Image (cartoon, rainbow, N blue to C red):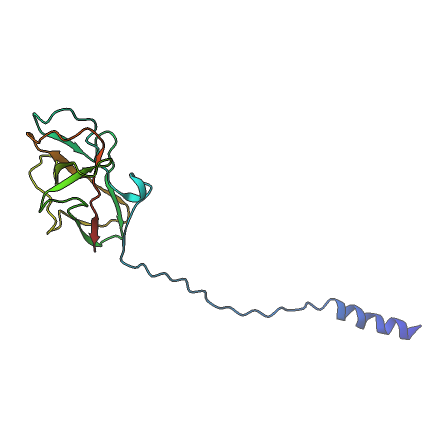
Length: 174
């Protein structure tokens, strides 16, 4: 019987000895590289960030007809550039120019044209040509809206009735 009691304290002491867990630590490095960029914002306005000037329905050119990207049916050019990125915006002449004159074309006849001009300001003082940037900016990481202004000059001959349009490529250089 003695032998049983002598073994019992040894068994109890083996069970009550704490088991220590070993640990080791390491580091997690988290990185990101932001590439200088600009892109058109499709959520801020026109389709896929495109701008739109809508002259509406016209019956006379006795006075100039003005419209811009802020009027009904219009949409500003929406750009997002990384914070601190400088950029310039320029405009091509469109699909139907006559020399340096931008023109919309009658969508059904494709033979009648309607001249118009683009301006960089609401005073219609700064004509947008196709040789230089009309807008310079610095990105702030948020959407920036750039408004454009269109004018059909007074005295323009009234062309055939119909829908007229043009497509002007706007280029953002950064």
